[in-house]
Length: 281
Image (tube, rainbow, N blue to C red; front, side):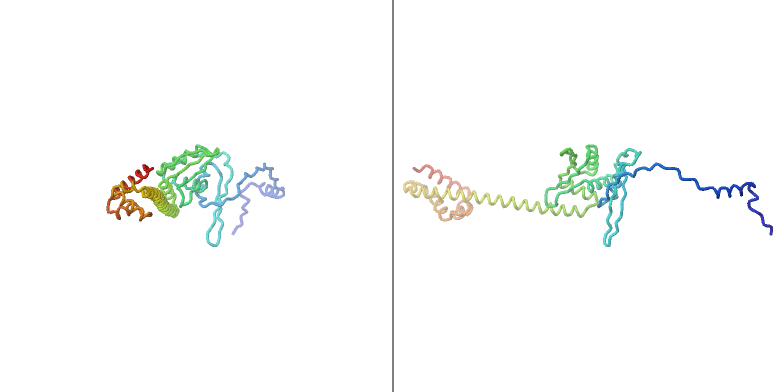
C-alpha cells in the first residue's frame, strides 16, 4: 500500500502558515461596553402566575415564572422587570371568550378584592389608568357582568356590586368553590335579614299594643270615677271596658274573641271609650 501525504493536495506553503499561526499569541478580546443590567423587581408570590405573565408580556413588560418545590405543593413566584427595550406597543385585545377570561383572571388576582361571603356583594379592581379601566369594563360586558368605573383618590376602580354579576364572574374565571361560598353566604345573609325584619316588626307591634292598652285602661278608670258618665255608656261599651280591664295584656284579637264580636267592632268600641273619657270633666 502506498502512503499518500494528505498535505499534497494543498498549497506547499500551508504547513508554514500553520506553524506560524500556532506560534502567534491569540488576539486579545476587544473591550466591550458593559451594559447595565435592567432592574428587576423582587420575586412576588402569585396564585396564578401564568395569567399574570401573559398580561405583562402583552404590555411589553419582561416577566418570568419561578417554581419553588415544596413537600406538599409547589409555590410559584412571578419575577417582573421593566419594559423591554424596543418592545412593540401592546396588541389589540382579543375578544375571544378564552382571552377575555384570562385577562380578567389576571386582573382579579393581581389587582382585585372581593368582599366577605356573608356581607354585601362587592368586587373592586384597582387600575392605574382610565384606559385600562375601560378595557376591563369591556371584558366584563362580554361576560354579561354589569359594573361601573369610578375614580377614588386619583385611582381608577372597576366596581361590581351585583350578587348575580359577581357569581357569574367567579364561574367564568374558574372559581366554582368561591361561588358556592358566595351563594351560601348570601343565603345566610338573606335569612338573617328576613328574621331581623320580622323580629323588628313584631317588637314594634307589641310596643304599640302595650302603649294603646295603657291609654285605654287609664280612660276606663276615669270613666269609672264618674258614675254618671259610666252609667250613661251603652252596654256594649261597658262590656268592652270590662273585658279590657280584666285582660290588660291581651291583643285586640283576643279581646274580640272574649267579647264575642269582630276585631273591627272591638276597635271601634275602644275608640269610643277614649272619646268619652276625653270629654269627661
